[in-house]
Length: 121
Image 1 (cartoon, rainbow, N blue to C red):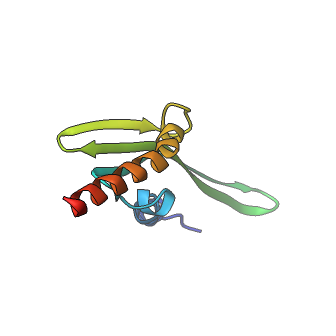
Image 2 (cartoon, rainbow, N blue to C red):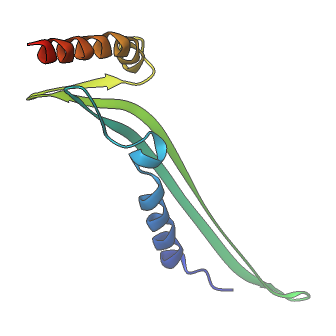
């Protein structure tokens, strides 16, 4: 039994690159009025493997192998830009992402008001 660890690691890494993206975890970049919002995630991973072989006089040759991998993905927040200003809204904090979502109705109302003013001018 042969363990091709480098080949396995390559396949796992390719899979993680394709799946551990902001689009698959949180969503794609979006615009809200003058604001551009880019989701930010944190990815952690670990790998391990082991193997051994030996022989017993009565039972013959023995060998064993194993491998494992783990991936943790966590939404961190959003980078928010408006013009040349940039800020980070942290997820899971009252003053972060939750506060941004609380402001969405006010922001939509302001955008609608400005649009109406522009149309009436």
